[in-house]
Amino acid sequence: MAESRDHNDFKLTTTEDSEGVGPGGDVTLHCHLSPKTSAVVMTIRWFKGTECIYLYKNGQVTERSGYEGRVSLITQELERGNVSLRLRDFRRSDVGQYRCQVIHGERKEEAAVGLEVKLNLMSVTMITNSLHSVLHYHYSRISILDNGTIS
Image (tube, rainbow, N blue to C red; front, side, top):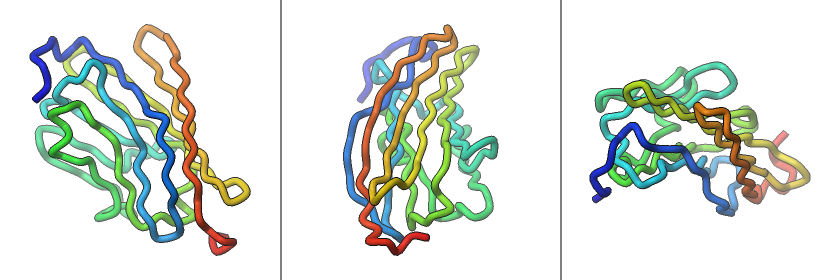
């Protein structure tokens, strides 16, 4: 269980994980609250480009058309501040820029994650941007086992 903290005193952080994924596989876009704070009562949005593809608010979930059943949070991990997005059935159209936004009260934090395919490597670049315009850069790579099958 997360320590009792002021829920408005948090930042978003990313991890430098590596994992393999192929067409039809699953990939996680990692994002966590720091310090470890429960996100259960927070509003969590994930965007691809400018479109909201996933919304968690007041325990309710809304998924954008084309992502239904393919995107989710690990709800049992929200208590520990894990707001990572799990993307199932990876496809070429999933390549692009994603942004996680967490809002609680007056506080809003965002983290951007780019998902792209390059020479059989899918790299995930994570940038955390706080309200105070302080940028933290974290880099992570995920190998994609496409064997030329993603076009």
